[in-house]
Image (cartoon, rainbow, N blue to C red; front, top):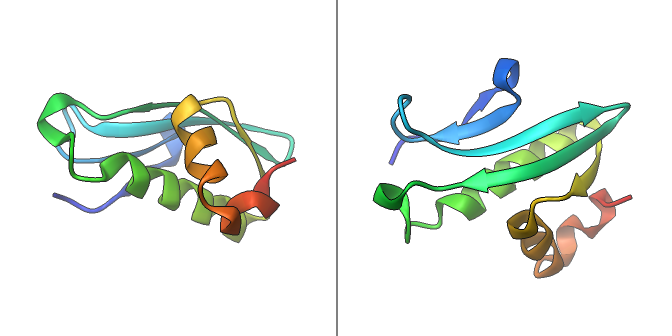
Length: 90
């Protein structure tokens, strides 16, 4: 599996084949990072890739001083299970 890429122009974190990547999509809104969608194609499922994408996005939010709005149900659940990210929530 390839490493996580931050495709800022597209507003997403990606991994895998560039033609059909696993991805986590976000919007920047006034100092806030709204994470609204995570998708992992069948070929990549079961490899923990959604968690790696979420960790990369949340790490970037922390480094950038952004608060996070997790409207993606996967990311909301990911944060709920990991209190080390709770300080990022509004």
